[in-house]
Image (cartoon, rainbow, N blue to C red; front, side):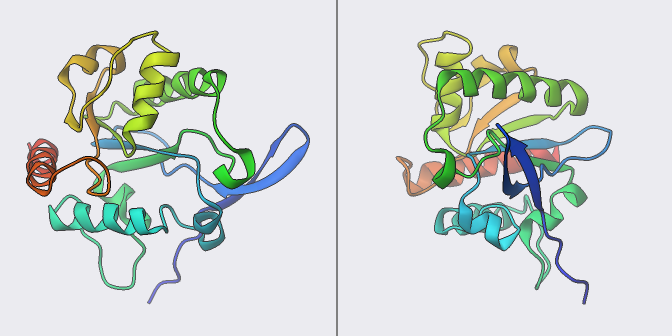
Length: 192
């Protein structure tokens, strides 16, 4: 069995070094889906893998349940992303327990980076794992007084150049039937 990949990297900010997780992106070429995540948790960084929290396990399980991500036994989910044409980034690299809450400038800088990645990798779907991230980008970066909804947001495609999907985490404000509808729509889109 192959040794699991470790996504930990060390970065510098304001003269201080910190451990975080590397973006999961191809060197070149397009993506079917680019996933945008909150700043990493210290728990995920310590594990060397994305989304090692209770919420993360729910996220990975829903992707598997709707045949969006096939995960062989004994392999971390994030190790399979590029094999499926998916990428994943954090909106900010410093772990949230160290950095704290992001401000408007962080969201504006994150948007510039995100738009550059969209231009480079041309994802069919831009998936925001947390609705809060997208809502703050819309308000702080685009100046829009608009709240995203779970599932696809066709009115936002013109801002990002990709289909925009907000992940319906069941712990949020989504009913189970809505979660199923949104996840099936995502699965169908990625297979078309």
